[in-house]
Image 1: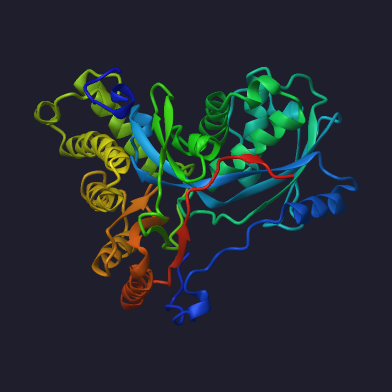
Image 2: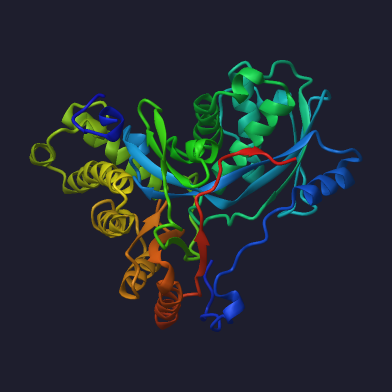
Length: 424
């Protein structure tokens, strides 16, 4: 592999005041997952005929490897139970119409011809669906102006919580289109599908993300974390036996929303800083930095030095986490969680007070470790918690948020879930 990083592939919405304390029934809220039969029935009510099928793509949490994907590094996500479900029927009228349960009465419509050209289109929430059809046309998979579709979607995945709702929507759309339009060669090539979904988000929507989110939504397996090399796209599903180890992954949604596609976003700025640092160091990507101390001595900009320190050490933490998981030392991964968060807070500077509060209070209440997950500047944190400490950690986090005057966070225990698939 290029660079000096050894890895296991080569070795084998805020409120003015806090909400009241939840009742025991509400302690571990489990969102009602979208019922594919109801979604199909709603589709039929909308369009007058049954859909060709219903497909689902999950969100993700990243266990380790934040902002390393676009640096050609290593990542370790797992899919979560919550996701986006989509019913679709192909048509030959050249019109794509999208209806969403989250936006009743606001259907989006565009023609296939409108998707031609290499330009960003500000189409709001429907842009993620339009971007997928644009990417399919650009790649030659859907030819002709008569290609159309009728779509209805529903989601149990919170938007803006850093759980990759946009990638889930893209991947559900892509899998549905590949299946319904008979794109057999594409449907079986998950890395190629991830690249197409990423192209939709990068070029059409305008968010400069790496390939982590789309790969996780498409390639994860139940009971596993996805160990992904973002340069080669080589991946292994690593067993994540949380239940056997008496552990849970607790997702703490702070309610602070973020958007990577916003012009001038902190996410885009961090990517630009990493690219500038790589140029100054004479490497293709920060993944190729072999000697961190020498690299830091070379750079004169203290901001770039902090960015490089995070990326290089974060890639090493991914390797370390995978090593511990394979050695059966899953509880020890918690310390890496916390070290990763400190690096994101101090070196990559992508945390926020609510995320810091979530991490600090979870660890103080007995979590094995905690870290923010996702692109940063809001969203969610995750904590590795022993089963018997779940209530204590939940209560500690809620109390810390209330003390600081933040809106009550939403806490959910997540299990490693399957990637995108057809559900009806």
